[in-house]
Structures are given as structure tokens and as C-alpha cells.
Image (cartoon, rainbow, N blue to C red; front, top):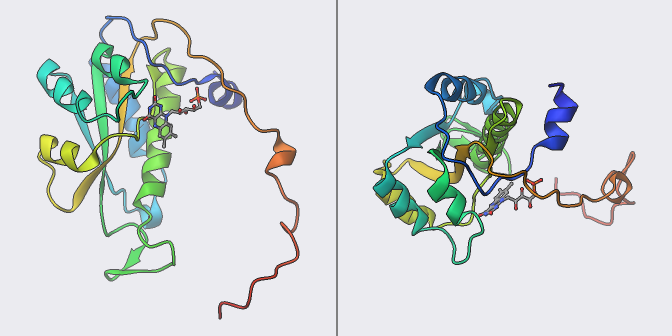
Length: 188
Ligand SMILES: Cc1cc2nc3c(=O)[nH]c(=O)nc-3n(C[C@H](O)[C@H](O)[C@H](O)COP(=O)(O)O)c2cc1C
């Protein structure tokens, strides 16, 4: 599958069949995480692979009320919790280098999407899930203080293709040379 086809045809999948995900495919998808770019190659990700039914149920209880992916997390044979080691990405000698502070969310987004695209290329479905009680999930997974959950990604074979939501047209978000003449004062 070429890159553009993979990017454009990947959909959020929220219903899965019972078909197991072979270990070697999961390993390949985790390899896609491994090769994601990150701030100064800090690779702040920690990935928890959950297959146990009770463990999954404990996580499902922490999803936001009415989260449309709850059933998908229950059905998926594998659920991954993407976590970030805080305080390294975007930092130099313990201090944030930019006004953006901790860049772990950025690195995690790339790593998570690498995973989802690699899964799609293998005929597997995923969905990024961000709406949940992160502190409770951190506790359930036994994460140390410096590691925080960021997103949950269920993985499995799609029961049916995800719906294709519309997208903005490029002219609605692409700006050439400048967005506008700046009215901001010089930040120094
Ligand atoms: C950071 C992030 C958080 C998301 N959180 C949730 C979520 O909590 N529940 C859910 O069902 N989908 C969630 N989604 C999936 C989006 O709703 C979905 O990507 C969007 O509607 C576009 O659909 P598509 O992925 O099929 O292109 C999330 C996506 C992203 C990128």
C-alpha cells in the first residue's frame, strides 16, 4: 500500500471481530512506534499491551461517559495504552527549551499515528482514544510518577469499515507566506 493511500484510507475503527492479532504482527506495529521521530531522539514513549479481560474492563470504566469507542475496547483482542515519560522531551538539562514546555504529547501523537498507519497497512483497525480519566488509568497500570498515560489504542480486525468523516478543504487551512499582517508586539 502506498503512503498516500494508507493515510487517506485509514479510519477510526470502533467495532472489531474476535480474530486474534498474531504476535508477529503486533511486534511489527511496535517496530513502527520504535522508529517514530522524537524531540532530540528522546523516545519518551512507554507502551502497555493489555489483553487481560479484567484489566480491559478496568480501563473501560475510565473512558469518558458515552465514549463511542467503549464497545471497541471491549471487543478488541489487544488494547495498547500509549504512555509518556514526562520531563525529557523538549528539555535541555532539566529546563524546557521552548514556550511549548513538554513536547511529549507531540512525540506521542507521531508514535501513535505511526502505529495506526502500520496497522491499517496490515488490514487491522485502530482508533486513538484520548477522552478518559488519565490519572485513574495511570494508577490501574501501576505507572511510576514520571510516566503518564496519553492515549488508548484498541487493535483488531475491523468488523466493518469506519465511517469517513469529511475534512476541511486545503484552502481553509493552508496559508502562503503569512497568515496575515501581524498586529502582535515583538515578544523579544
Ligand atoms: C487525540 C485524539 C483523541 C481522540 N479521542 C477519541 C475518543 O476518546 N473516542 C473516540 O471514539 N474517538 C476519538 N478520536 C478519534 C477521532 O474522533 C477521529 O480521528 C476523527 O473523528 C476523524 O475520524 P477518522 O479517524 O476516521 O479519520 C480521537 C482522535 C484523536 C487524534
